[in-house]
Image 1 (cartoon, rainbow, N blue to C red):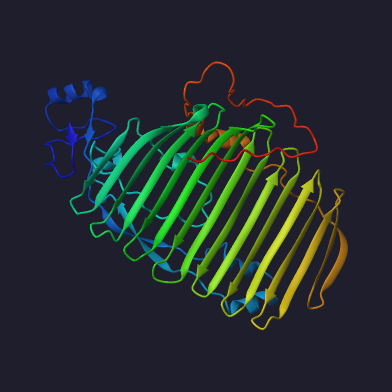
Image 2: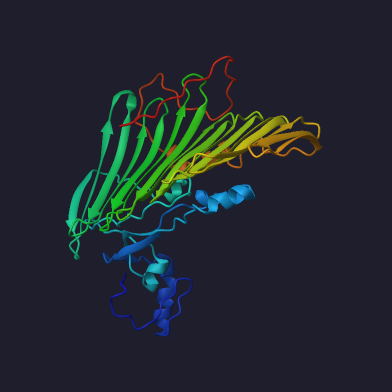
Length: 432
């Protein structure tokens, strides 16, 4: 039975959860009997919506964060503050409103039809997506095909496999398309890599541009490998994203990374940059949990305008066993070069006593000891067990059949502690 929103409606109604027809009783019984064996064939539509509006600019974690800074600084900064909310329109080939049948039955792409356009630009401050959200679906056979749609836009799709030394294998799929006048384009690549050492990698790269000249690029990687020195299994995830306006001096870039190992060590961080006309901003942050109770966190943010106004905020904290410290600085520089800053610090002794101190360039100062509980998180909210559970596609990558002998796979069990006195070298990612 073929369901097609454009075809004439049958003389009876069909529901998914139950069979409810007004026709003859005999037909009802037959359909009820065959209910478990229904097979539906969905028909895909190539109709697309040409434009999607996306807002790109300075988000809440950029310049707007100055609202949390000291009141005297916020007053100064407010004069040069710019609300970056420029809306960019990006080309997006998404299906039209789905028919009632399409809401319940998944869409499929018939053989020799063009790939569904997935040129939606990345969003700011969204971190690293889980693999299930990336939609990686590698073809099982070599493909090299292309075509032209009814509206004149063109597409291509190809896939293959590359082999190398030590069991290296890379399966990949590439696809893309462009409008009839080539003013808008999009590309997307998927890949999985493996070798006999147990190295596995899953990746995606996307890029595109629209007729207004707006462009974007995004890459995502997930890797598992066994450390060559400690034999500890490690999973690393990363994402880079950027977008640039074609009509004004505006754009942004983000680089996110996460590193986990089977002993409980977790490291996360990000570098961000953005610009909107005369204003630019930067942000860096990181956190490291060593798996034995030690925690390090830090953040550094700053911004500036073309007339020379600058401001920023940074802090760092270190804790282990309830003992640790926090320190930071907030600062501001006027176009004339006048600088204001306030520094502060805390020493936590683990006995309910906290030493607090600080000073500013306007003459403020304090140095006191107070009774205060120390609070910090010794473990990450998302760690090794979580990332393993969310990496099923990565872990299911099948390497080439290996010869008998060496090349052990990573062991997810316990490992002996590494010798003291040196840091293990990190295994560089293997690029094609």
